[in-house]
Amino acid sequence: MSTAPAERTTTPDVSVVICVYTEDRWGDILAAVASVAAQSYPARETLLVVDHNPALLRRLAKVYGDDGLGTPDGPAGRVRVLANAGPRGLSAGRNTGVAASSGEVVAFLDDDAVAERDWLLHFARAYADPRVMAVGGRTAPAWASRARPAWFPEEFDWVVGCTYRGLPPGRVEVRNVLGGNASFRRSALTAVGGFASGIGRDGDRLPLGCEETELCIRLTRAVPGAVLLIDDRAVIHHRVPAERERFGYFRTRAYAEGLSKALVAHSVGARDGLATERRYTTRVLPAGVARGLRDALLGRPGGAGRAAAIVAGVAAAAGGYALGRVRARRGGGRFAVAELPEVAGPPAGGEGAR
Image (cartoon, rainbow, N blue to C red):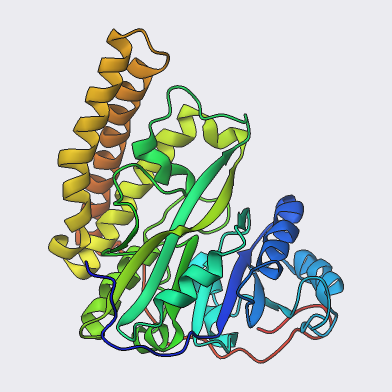
């Protein structure tokens, strides 16, 4: 698409939402907040939304200010710590952050990722075009083993929450952004009621996803002429722990993606819900298998493993999708869209806003 805007507006204030749920990621959380504080385009505020973990809520409130507002002149800038005001899960946590935010744009950063210095700058510049309702960026894997496993295909980097081979480079129009490195106009999120519950992740349960896909499809239907972009200069680095480098996690995550895609297709229709996936499965993945087999014939390490992993990943996702479709037809599609929650201000007494 042409990136020349129809008209120019001033760049917006940006609130950053980081959803957190476990003290096991304490160091990651502090690093994520610090990366926001170091942005060349300053965030209006950072909102840490704690998912039903009172101990983590109290601990973060002590670091960033007992009143939940942080210290405006402190090293992390203005940080608010608040509790998820909805049911357990990432979607409700994000909705809580949106409802509490004050920026014209709301950006989302994973709790185990750090943003490069110009991350928000590239987001903000894209919103100079008033048609733009969402902007995503590029998420690079930071492997625990210091290097990509030889068998792990780049086409499946979405398994570990990262940008995958097959997405177009540059600043381009897309169907949906990827949730761990994304931003939305706050007015657009409010117009569609926020993220649907029952699709995305819920702590350590089955690693479902696709909540941002479903939201983006609803957004483009609700806002005529809405433009959604990915700008690969807006970069974050996402930590991939050792357990997610294993084939067992790869297969489980692919299966869960199939379940999630079935829920999305049931909600918005298969034409929109699977439009991007059709190109991915008919063009990107066969090319990946061919590259793997070629590398194997040339004696390059991991070629056969990557080809086999792609086939296994497709089979797992297809199995999950088939089961998800059956459940959806039987009334098992367990998600709903509601109005964004009311957030009663900063946490008090260590228990947080509910």
